[in-house]
Image (cartoon, rainbow, N blue to C red; front, side, top):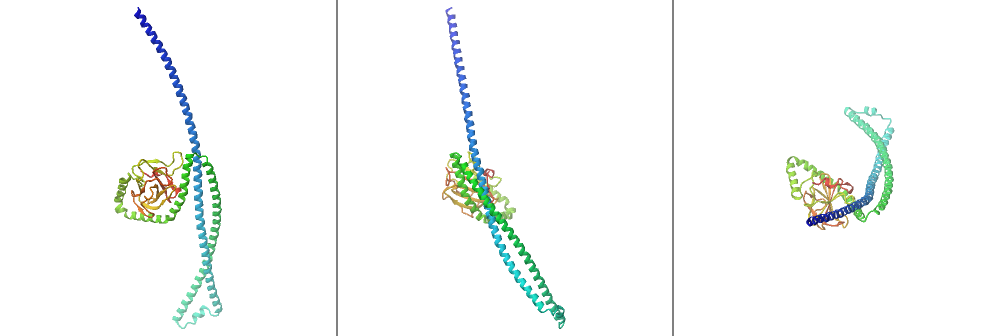
Length: 413
């Protein structure tokens, strides 16, 4: 009996303990659930706030980028108008010189014709018939007839020349007037565009003031790049004709040799790319640095336009920078800002590549030099506006200016 009572007591105590534990466990579970829900709510709010902040940043950056695009467009338009004005001024000067020469020729021919008419008038009693009838024989007659024919032909040519000169002078004067009107229009357009440009720059400064410190730093880099690229664009323009001539000559040579050497040259190109920096893309490019991946793409993480790709990673400092394809070196420069030590190459497919931030003193090529795919042109460094060792790599379409940048990832293997 005692044993039974003891068992019942133990079971009763166990039931009470289990119930208490269940109550405590349930209470703890509910508490944890509530805490989890609270945390999730806070997390959701935080994420929502973060998205809103990112949205605001993105809007500000988008506005700045939009204004940057407008400013670039205005500057390009001004450059085109200045070129047009220069051409028109040259055309006007040339037209004025041609008119001056034409009027001089006209006056000369007019004087000659007047002299001929005076002579004919003064000798009016002697007609061509009388002149012929005075011939002493057949030979003399034929000689005089030939002379009269030549004089008549000369008079006809002289009259035609005078008529053509009058017409040419009139056309040149009309063209001159058209060019002068076009010049006035272009000057008015350039004035208006400059006003719009200044307005866009003022608005951009307002928007930049609203950016975060990180975005301002990025924007400063972008602005510096743009300033330096204006100088680079001028350098490219200065050698553009020479580069184009070299490219056309290379194309012609390639076409002439294609029948016999196409397979061997293609194999050589491919092996060069494969041995030095992996495969060759459909655009004919290899990667400009071996063993490293793209760490920054066409856009920065903030959403700002990068306009290039960066290759970086542990141990990249001093690694060889390779020519992405055969081509001609347009320019090599050493800057203390933006690109630092950089190289631009014009390729035979009409594309340009830019390699930046090389080690000081490592540039191994010079302007006008021909390079082959996979050839070392410098070493990866951190010169210019750089926060660490990396290769800044750009691809540009013809004519190779800053505004012609395209996403390199579309051209790399």
